[in-house]
Image (cartoon, rainbow, N blue to C red; front, side):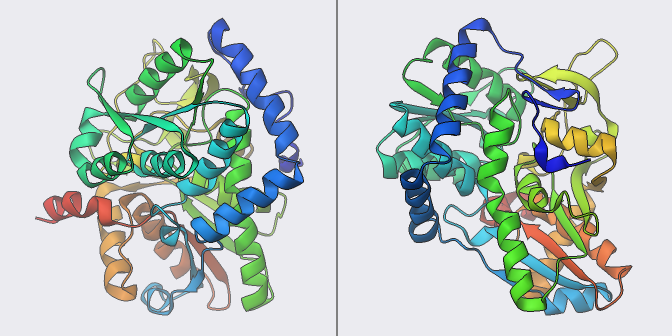
Length: 392
């Protein structure tokens, strides 16, 4: 099975598709046609490469975490430092690509949803540098726990709309953004932040994020003359993990592990390990839902993982067994946060702290010559208040 050939007709096996109101279908076709045209256009690719390099700071380093390796006591651990990219997370990669595409398409306005706030910050900075009006939808719960990022978005000139319906988290922010897009589709581009939503979004976001895995491949070849033995990344909607995994999905010798939010005894956000098939936000995937198909409320200390669904390509990888998906609890993630901070002087976001926790356990069972790469998808500035309260 050649995974790199997906999507086929907008589907990832039985997952994916475009389950949207009729008013949005022409906009999706317009986006797909523009992407197919400009993603192969030399001028577009050069402009995006220049923004990634000179504005975003790519390539991000691949760092040999020696003390973290010693702590695990097994395989050799490398960190892919997406936390050093402009804006503080991997979100920049996709946002800059989509924002440039939107400007070429003649759109004057960007809208987006955000949970942890990093996607909102990235969209706001892209809107600022490209001169596009920007509005961000964010659930009230996330606004309260991510105040620094809310202030950053406002400083960058974006309008932040606080969503007070439903669970007041990422799911509800997406609902409001979709309503906005339906009403303003002519002049507005909905800049989706993960590999979710209707086709062609999962494909587009994946393609802009695969720079992560491509760089890992070339950087590790330079450092070790080898492919990695194991890749680890956290999974919410799934964009940083997809960007990490995709260049390796047809390399059977590379093991891939996605790490979901195991939450607490009250609940979790592990749609791949505990979800069932359903349709949410325009695509068929694996969702946390009850017997009647109603979406369950999620629970995670990491706002960016607090989503009841996942990208359809991840659902395909789960169904076929290409990627192994595991859960990490809030407490385990906090321990990963602490260990990385104390051993390497790197304070991670709570989302990749889940991957650090799982990666330490995986590395401990590997032989010393084996190579493990963990994608550090964001930095922890935004989470210091949350962690301080949790560690009390």
